[in-house]
Amino acid sequence: MKYARFERILILVITIAVAVMAAAMIVQKTDGVEIFGHVMMLVVIVASLYLGKRGALISFLACFSAYTAARLVWIGDFTYGTAAQLIAAKFLVYGILALLCSYMRVQFRYFFVKLEHQDFIDDETQIGNIRFLAKELASRIDENERYDIPFSVIGFSLDETFVEDMSNQGINVLRDLSIGILKSDTRSVDELARNNNDLLVILPSVGREGAQVCGQRLEVKMHKYLEQHLHDGESERVLNLAIYEYPEDKYDVDALLEKLNSELKNL
Image 1 (cartoon, rainbow, N blue to C red):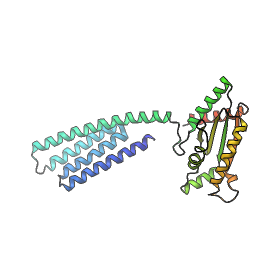
Image 2 (image 1 turned 30 degrees about the vertical axis):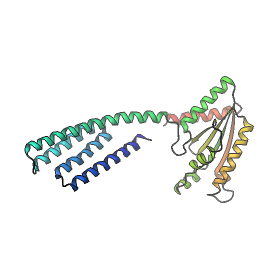
Image 3 (image 1 turned 90 degrees about the vertical axis):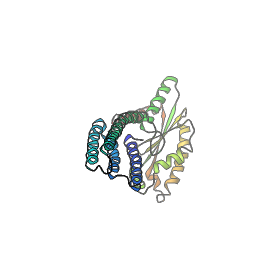
Image 4 (image 1 turned 135 degrees about the vertical axis):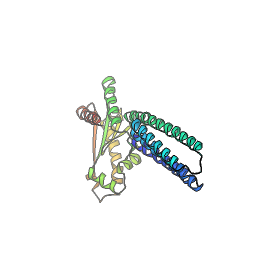
């Protein structure tokens, strides 16, 4: 999950909680200024989470000043002593919220950035992402150079226009193919990854012959799925199969790894 998405979810939850509490105060016929002061808590929280220390300081001063002015102008049935206690309580509440939320922003942003850099799972397909694919290829190449253990890569390339058209219809083709076919019809030691509109299977200790058998089996199942959304014969147009064996196809695999590393630098 991206930090921005987490931030929006957190603010939504807090907003609902504050709104429910404000509604309860209205039902109980609580003083209007206190309801206003309660809602100002949300302003402090949002500003502190989105803008950090500067937003926390500005929102704290603005909300505390606005509440203090409102409380002193519309003192209602309260004595000045009680009003002073309420103002002091809001000073503490706003201050604690500002400090806490600005601190959370720094800590959670750092945590999510760190998590994103270590994340190897593609959000849509739940198989490996580009970072995972680059890491796995580099590891397999190194293993081959050290121990002379071969491996193969099966690549399924889907037509970009077709994928976009299906997405507009609410159909996630990449996810369906990944979860419904690749995950269910490969070995536990095989590694699956997505690179844009390409789905790849890394087969450890498997040569070209074994990779061709596996690739053709998966291709047949993918065509059956694609034919549900296409006219007869069109699935051949939108799906292409490529098989590489390392080290025989060293140039192609090295070129793929170099391309992945170049894309990672731009993320």
